[in-house]
Length: 153
Image (cartoon, rainbow, N blue to C red; front, side, top):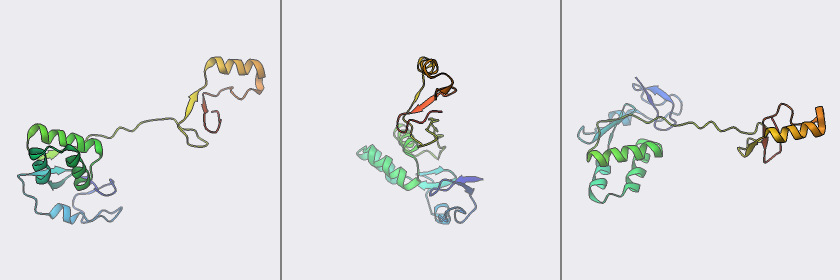
């Protein structure tokens, strides 16, 4: 079975002793003596979340629980918050947690400078430029303009 490395996040075998990409030692994570009572399996690795459960039950410092989950399990902020909410709702540690998929935002960038501060060239602006400059207009067949470097594409 493939799991994600807690250090670099790349897929590796759960039978590996260390990550083949970054060298992170996995043997300690897999073979650590975690009791099944407060253990949660995340990406094929068992983590003892007894301390996090105690914090939730005693003082309810959610910031501390989320921070601890991120450090101990290598979770993203989103996944740590979701797992924290599950622990609060159940008042116990789930036996397994499946990571929520990370949303990749598709934001257009300027091909010249890489800036995301771009604007779409309106039809009116494009038409006025073509009427004024004719075939010498820089806005023929262009859709976007970078606000930083002025490049149009």
